[in-house]
Image (cartoon, rainbow, N blue to C red; front, side):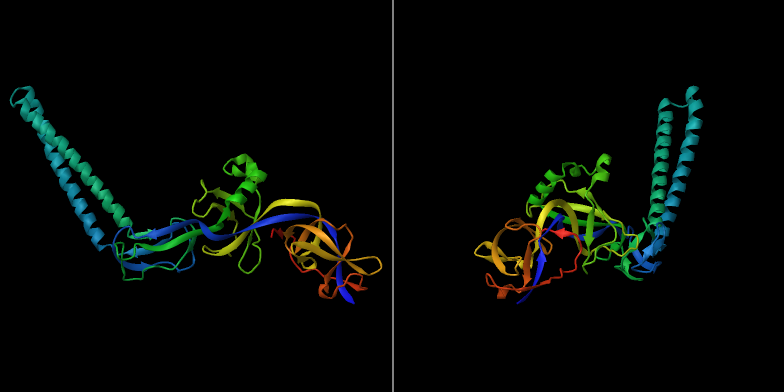
Length: 357
């Protein structure tokens, strides 16, 4: 009887944990219309890269220009009143010293002068506000980044509900951030194993952080390793999870906000462990068994005590020794004492990262 066999090996096995996360920009900034008016022009290619300070949108300025003109006129009138009030004070002051006018008249002139000064300051503030509002008619990019599709088109009235106020979203995608939740029990296990890793904000432990891998939707691993940047203050009472945000370099801009991926981290290493393929292990009523090929090419069924699953293999606690030959394929035809013709079994092609099952 021809069967496929492999040897029991002893290896150090890194154990990884995985969590599902969602990508987001380092900064996701909403581009808002801060003044209302008709959108007159869009100056960028939607869905492309823009630079800080680049003009994005133009809003009709006619109403804002009228407000600016009115503010300038108000400032001019206030300055005229201030000049009259200042001349009255200058005229009344020597007359009051000669008792040609009453002190009350001088005090009234001084009060009008101070009120005129306040009116000038208020008019200057209104002029500055009008200039600021006019500058809002040209919306520029606050950062370098990737911009999305516009929520309004040329000719739409924007900046006032129910019309669009948020025109677009601009994201800094290098590095890209991934936010993912971990369970409370997982957090406790990791925090106890790596107590210094909780102090991410302290510079002296930055180099000691656990490197993270990002497995993308197609199964490939992102070329850049990441690190945890932020940890939520509290455990979410409704979900029992703690939110962590990690940063991954994204120089080629392959990753975009809104993608899903699996964040993978090495949590421990199993040293000098016996490993067998999971498919070689049979379970019957809670008992685990494997078929062992003896030196005379006969097989015997042996009870084993199994540990945790790691990737496609299984850790054996007791029942096997290094170098034992076990049957991987052909288990259904096995009978104790049967003579077999062992052939080597080819393990599946996979990476070296063992994900805990």
